[in-house]
Length: 101
Image 1: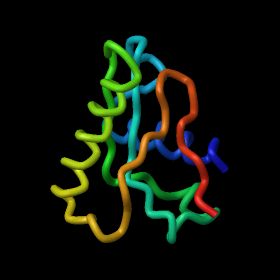
Image 2 (image 1 turned 135 degrees about the vertical axis):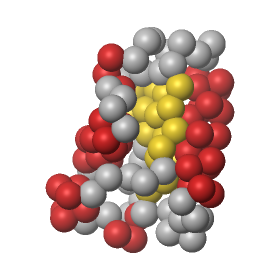
Image 3 (image 1 turned 90 degrees about the vertical axis):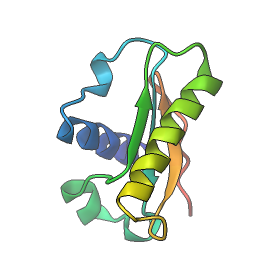
C-alpha cells in the first residue's frame, strides 16, 4: 500500500539517522523503489537504498527537484540504476506515491 511505501521510506531515513517527521516544514522525500521486489517481506525487512529529501523548501516543485536529485545521486553511487526508479513519496505529509499495479 502507499502507507507501506511511506513507512519503508521513513525507516530508510532513520537508517541514516534522519527523522523525516521532525524535519522543518516544506519537506519532501523521494526513494528508488524496486517495484518488482516489493512484497510483504520487503516491507518488513528492507530499506530503500537510494533516498532523497529536502526541507525548508520554497514550494512543492523545488521540493520534488531537491528530493529526486538526491535520490538519483544515491542511485548512481550505489549502481542500482537497473533495479529501481526514483519517485516522489512525500511532500510534507501528503503522500505523492501511487502504487504501480
